[in-house]
Length: 278
Image 1 (tube, one colour):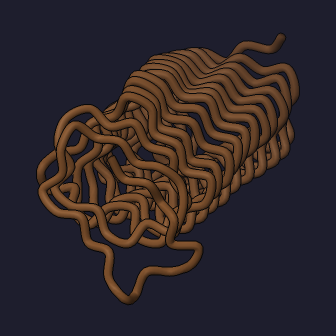
Image 2 (image 1 turned 180 degrees about the vertical axis):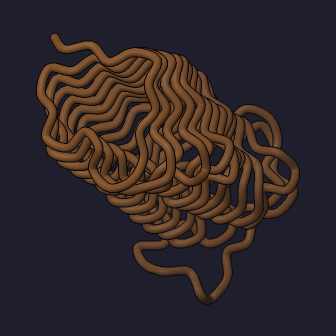
């Protein structure tokens, strides 16, 4: 493997079409497409400042690196990415990726990140300003995600999340086959129009959660007081610990909680209108 250490590059495509390359303590200054169309690339202790450094790459390992804000849209259309112990200050990171593994990564400015990705594994990841995280992605496995950002996981399928804290409104809209375990989800309009959303040992906060759902299951979950007007027009099986402020017009299934502030069943309920609430 070729090694480049303690050097600086900038401009247009300085390391274009490299194969079998290790970068140690290298700085990529302003410019575009520094390492585009490359394969078997390792980067350790590097700083990326220019746009689009990794596009159309195969086999990229990044560790202890820094992506400055100018390195926006840094890794797109790439296969087999492993990133560890790295800070990403740039938005629009990670799109159209196949097989991406992020471990101990911090993304303090993560707007429009992780779009249209497939086979993603995240562990110990922190995300801030992460609006629209994981749009249109599939086959996602997450352990210990700390997320601040709205509209997350919209239109995703085959997602499993554990041990996470998600502060995000409009999360899991129009998703299919999502399981969330041992996590906290705070944000209004959770899970609308989802199919087969399964929440286990979760705390839920925010108004009007879990409406228009099909195949919704809750096991041993709890609701914050502001999680009102829940389950409108949903097909739901729910086992809830503690009180629920209000339930409104669930369409089908069964809901069990320790107590209810209000149960609203009015003339707008939709058929089959046979949900058992107890």
